[in-house]
Amino acid sequence: MNSALPLSGIRVLDLTVVWAGPAATQHLADLGAEVIRIESAHRVPSSTRAQPHVTADMVKRMGMLSRMSYPGGEPQPQPYNRTSSFNVLNRNKLSATMELDTPEGKEGFRRLVEISDILVENNAQRIGDRLGFSWKELSAINPKLILCRMPPLGLTGPYANYLGFGAHFEALSGLTWLRAYPDADPSRTSPTFHMDDVSPTVAAFMILGALHRRRRTGEGGLIEIPQAETMLHQIGDVVLDYSMNNRTLPPPGNRHHLYAPQGCYRCQGDDQWVVLSVRDDGDWQRLVQAIGAPEWARDPAYATVNGRHAHHDQIDHHLNGWTHSRNKLEIFHLLQEHGVPAAPVQNEADTFADPQVNHRGLLRPLRQESTGVYNHPRQAYLFSDMELRWERGAPTLGEDNTYVYKELLGYSEQAYRDLEARGLIGTNYAVERPGGPGSAEAGD
Image (cartoon, rainbow, N blue to C red; front, top):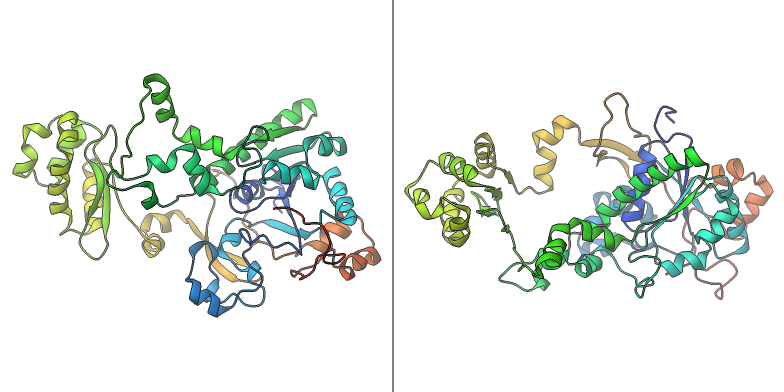
């Protein structure tokens, strides 16, 4: 491990699920922290590692869902180590299996908390408390611990124990309404899971702040990040407009409440599109010049933003007439050369072939034990004089049990083998809970 990385020497316990939590701890791992995923070998987190018993035939029947896909469409004997959704969010991490609802698991967890700096979890409030990682319990074990909790809706209030994913809380916060189309109801609006990508950045930022405070004061602390609340900050202008004007804006679709024209326009070829925005009258004049100053564009009614808003449908008709016979990349470069914001709508193949992506090295090969070597998106940030961590792919289930139990916690060989024999640790998902069918469940 590179000792020069900013978080080298910091140990993080990762009890996260799905997307937002694992993405938060991946930021920390990329910056050099030792991140240990604590996982159960008995309770399968279907939204994190997918299902333990998936066949190639099932994959074909279900279709290749992008967030649950497997290399070559082959799940193989341990599909939970091979999903794209798990691999893309867990590089540079370790994995240890630990049954937190058993006395042995609680003891191992307590000992890990004693020697760790940070714990991150993103379950509903009741799940974390039931498993024993409330701030009161954990701070009693390690007063210097930084606990980051990322419940969907907060640790208090009437919704504190409600469950859901990004799609649900995008709707609750109002983002789904704002992304709808004027001529369709919100059922036609696909989820973007925007919350799942916003919350982890906020979490990493707050954890770095807490580490800085701890260096000055010696104190740990509890960080609470209600993920649905992070969404309100993404639409703060709309919230403030309602606060000031008691106004609910209609869904804009591809249009903008200020810019005109703005839209997505069909280009040459099958399902090819380009998006563009005209921010002001200067942009409009530059767009008119770029498309050859046709007669229709010189209409005085289009010279002002109010006029362009009033005649948006007509302008869209003319623009579609211009774009549909041209290549989307040709349009993209032409409009950018004239200073008009524009971009092609790209699919995965377009992105892999994109010259900017390749020039910047945004896709880098990374090896994982169960998948082999594939290109992954690298970190979205760079240090000018330091290479961020890019050492190993996502861990297989329980891959680092030996290191965690023997080296970190000091378990003897006999004690370790005893835990294995009793099914309390493992590298495969077991059918029965340790102790038999009547054992308690670890979480929702």
